[in-house]
Length: 234
Ligand SMILES: Cc1ncc(COP(=O)(O)OP(=O)(O)O)c(N)n1
Ligand SMILES: Cc1ncsc1CCOP(=O)(O)O
Ligand SMILES: [Mg+2]
Image (cartoon, rainbow, N blue to C red; front, side, top):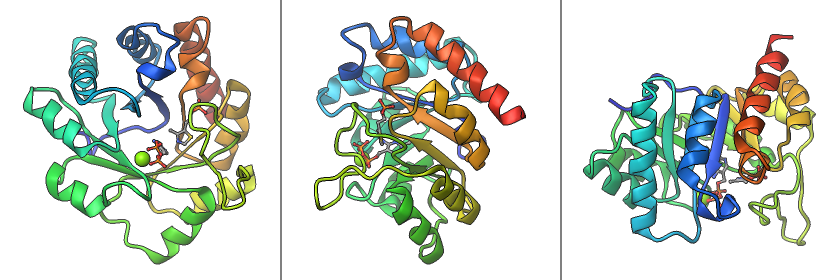
């Protein structure tokens, strides 16, 4: 029922109510899906559990209404409880995205089941080591980055000295070549990065602000999808 055997991380939009400049989150999600995005992550560090569950149910309804349940996957950032609660209310939430300090992948797999999508993130250089040393059986894709400092996640790429370490396209290419599961890259990604990103061979990009803070999110999503498709075809 969930999309584990059939998901596309190529055009991956992350959003929560704190990202949209007070504009309606569902409307932006609907526009982004209509324009061609293939993967949606609900992520909020401020919304209540009820708000998150409600947003999951509404997003699942949008995907269903657009008849894209097989083409567009929906996951929740960090919150296993929200995935389970939204499913209980009938939403098709395909899985979860977790990072290094979140609920372990094995625990997510146990509660979500074999057909759920589970993404894991870490800094690009840590993932290069991770793929060599660890078992990736329960992980369906890697979220890596950042490419640039991210205003949506200011701690992304922060090292122990308080510096933001961004990743070069060359490192991203090395990660992609060493990984046996899909790699999606994000953190400060803008439309003008897509060609270089596509050239690294990564399976997709993820972003928040390039769409959620754009004057016209629908137009931004359309242009970003077109640019990615053009870039991977070259
Ligand atoms: C696709 C994707 N990649 C990376 C992240 C970051 O996850 P994490 O490091 O756990 O940080 P938070 O997003 O929880 O602040 C992500 N969410 N999605
Ligand atoms: C969730 C997340 N994880 C790593 S960077 C990031 C935020 C990306 O947002 P933006 O595209 O606005 O930099
Ligand atoms: Mg997390």
